Image 1 (cartoon, rainbow, N blue to C red):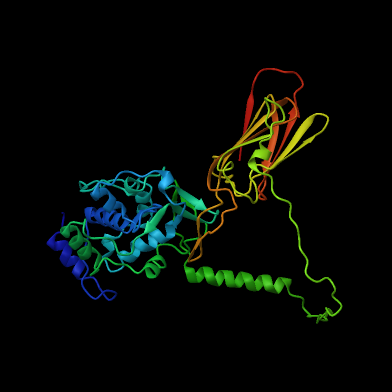
Image 2 (spheres, rainbow, N blue to C red):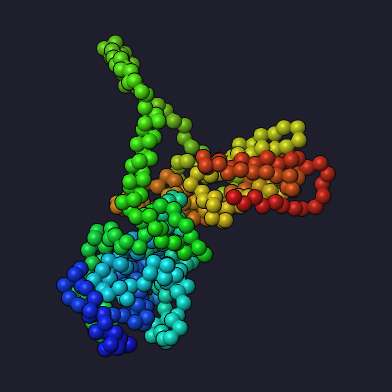
Length: 411
């Protein structure tokens, strides 16, 4: 364990410590890396379906527990902004040299934090050593904020597996007397590294920049904009509107009932037109869906020289590069993508909702394939994927059969 020199400690002791009750201890680069591994490895663990209580990532590593698979994980999400807040909250009483900047924290989370030039690291592990990308993806949830999938917060980590010297080192560097953290205070801690954690930010090589506009300045600007909008839409002379009264005394409708037709089953959708060409083939999460809005509903239109198809794809990602639509010469259309709906748990604001019934398609990869009425020219295919979740494509009919070919349409 590296300790700072006496000269550096006396230099740190001269700094004002009004925000903390006791003197703070300066940290080396090795201390910074130790705190990153300790906090993100002790206070977070995989969200395993059958594990109660949850074990932290460091606890699993020390105990030598077997690796888990994606099927064992719960489809939950954890905000990156909350991970930031918890890290800085745990070091709120620490010397500034113990905390890394926000860009370095993000590099550590992505597994790209470079080693120091003048020191040899005691611990080379990064966040991805505990939470590998293929099991805990970094994604954008509902297109608003960034998340890490299938991860939980452990506010009072188990200490039986920890070395006593590691616990003392953490307490000395963090300025904390105990390891337990308050969940609400930690997740909402304002660390001041940027102005607004849930709005879109500029990025350089995938790492967020710190926005110079403060929270108060942003609020004042939004207030001015809302006032200007109100002045521009308000009539100069308000005209009183006469309230219309409805007389319900002669209402003779009484109770009514609306009958909805039953949705078709997967077997009905997979009915065979002929032995070679099934109408619609579903696989992946689309094939195991329950009743409700369906993925893969298809309408096909024809004209003299082209075919038009429209496919319903609610809750399908279209901006991550993993969505594609392939059209082949014989008229086969293959759609591949990833759904984001049907979660078993949902975060809304500061609340976690456990979904009781899942009528939407479970999250994950899917494929939908169907055949157009005849052969086509794949090179003459245009498609659009609207915000309403409808994929629409127009492909020209085949004039002269040439060989097998396909065209990939990516959003």
